Image 1 (cartoon, helix red, strand yellow):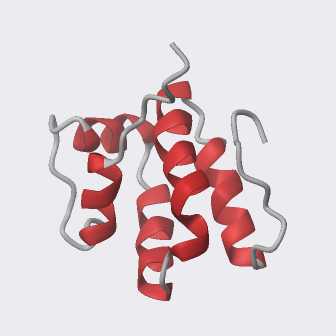
Image 2: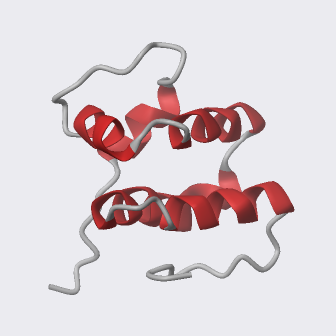
Amino acid sequence: MTGTTRSSSGLDDRRKRLLFRCWHRGTREMDLILGRFADSEIGNLSEPELAELERLLEVNDPDLYAAITGDKVLPADVTGALFARIKAFPIADGSA
């Protein structure tokens, strides 16, 4: 997977698919935001959090990016505690 630092080894099929989808969004910005979050957290997400992540991945990139940056509000049925964690997650990798 482009950019990923996490192996999908040891993950169940659902988590493997989600990890792949987080790194292959269509825009580099969303790949970095969701991909880095998934690299760090995918193995620890609960079933409800996985379901929330799946709902978030259905949102198109411009709308999701705008929601993450605070320029747009998504419907409440899409966002929850996981979305707040994604928004707060540090996206810089420290290599700059």
